[in-house]
Image 1 (spheres, one colour):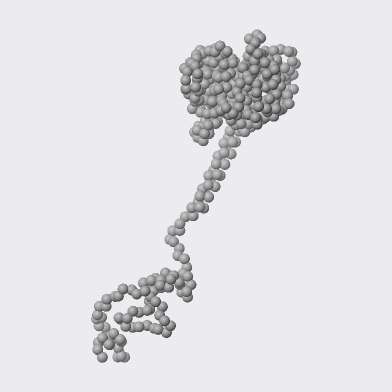
Image 2 (tube, helix red, strand yellow):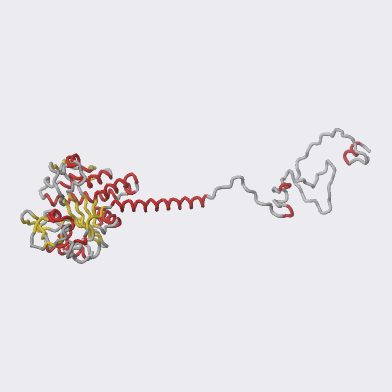
Length: 413
């Protein structure tokens, strides 16, 4: 028997042979494994393709996808492989992130509400007002700008040209009506000739009878404060006042500065030494000092008080528009100083809520945007002792429209 037969086909010698050098065998390219037919076994020839596959090349030994099409032991599919670092569940993360944002927003909003509510100065007690007219449709606010110098230093008074008069008087008065048929802003000239009705003293509690006395409207405020002013407005108009809001000189200037000034387009320039006004015509941004001078100026105009009330309406609306603008509301560095400045100096009635106050500012903004009507109280064009006289016929029609929340058709002066 040749060596090839001995070593290629196996040895018949029962004794093991010693180790000898094996000839170099060149490995053939791997042949795809095939399942041998039933009963066919192992072929020990070097040259013949071996149908048996140990699984090392295909990974079948360890359950990998081999020539059996991914089948594991016993024809069962292999267990799914786990990635060393599983991919993040982005949908779940987004939901959690959105929930955190919502909760955070609610916490900030609730905290801001209670902070603002604690700063609101509810000092006016409208329950002291007697013989009040019946409430009507919609909501009526009496908005007052006073010449109060409370909290102002000597330097502040000099800078703002306010003087140092004791006490406080109303520098501007407006009725704001909000309802389903549009909002209306009616200025009440402070020199309006009105009757002082019977009233109950805000501090003494004593009832003072109606003596038929007539005087300037702002004298009612100087005589017994906001409660008598509300009583006088209701008596002379027949309109129920639901809420009262007042701001003084210093608070007004601080609020304007807190929102970064208010842009105004002045049709003409004017000067007023007493108010500290010196303006040129054209578009310009007024700071707190300039704004106060603008709304107080009366000596620069022929129809002094009427023109001043128109200027006050324009500026108040522009201020409300700036405060309620997205650039202020959405900017915490702007809205918090503005709210702080406004709430520190605005005095309201005891039943005024933050919602009412916000509604008032939004209505003021709407009036200037063309969604409502802005006007002066209708006048006859006549006067008595220097006081302007209301047109009673037009005033009654106007007040009836406000009571019923009808669209205002009356024109003002």
